Image 1: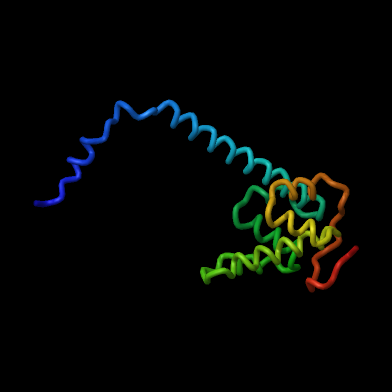
Image 2: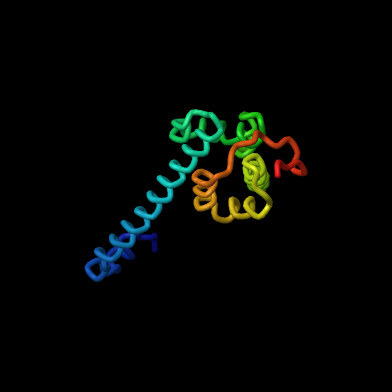
Amino acid sequence: MPFDPGVYYDEIPWDEIPWEELMGVWIAVVGVFLVILILNIIAKWRIYTKAKKPGWAALIPFYTDYIYYELSWGEGWNFLYSYVSLPFIPFVIGIITCIKVARSFGKGDGFAVGLIFLPTIFSLILAFGKSEYCGPVRKLSESYE
């Protein structure tokens, strides 16, 4: 007997699915995502202006990564390492970048942990706090404190 997908499709009680509730959940999820996206753009815009870079760079997808890595690593082209498809390398590079961003704004390791686990909140703290950009940290053992 050949497979007939119409049999299973017809057995689903489409009129009993709570479409209004599902749409409400979907709208809430998309709304939260958009709020987090806008907060990240605002934070990066402010961080870039603190570092004397163009704030509008937070709006351009790959250019924002280039500027972010230029602030933390000193060379913007290092952002290409985060797009390498080898396992765990982008993850490790992202952690090192968070540590370097925290140190280049004069923050310690605790703030770097915050950037790793709660990036939106700690980026906003970095953007609107009193910290100033000191320049890229060349070594992870180096600090400006």
